[in-house]
Length: 106
Image (cartoon, rainbow, N blue to C red; front, side, top):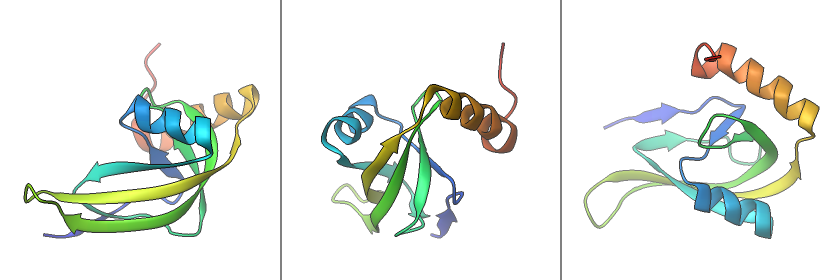
């Protein structure tokens, strides 16, 4: 059992529904598998499930726990600061592939 540290600038959604709720309502949450440490109080770049930069969010709460099924999970609550412009999204996505996600295909 151990904690995995998330990159200070990455908040990647695995679920389109979680991302939709954040963009639609200005607040949202996501659940990640395993114990993870998110930078509570900091602004980070949010990425779609397809690894595309989409917004700046502020991490409000990060709770790591063992759920009722006995799985280690981390729940992260956040608020939308703002959506990225098309140019910002393009640049952040390109940088993220180089730094975090690996080489971009195509």
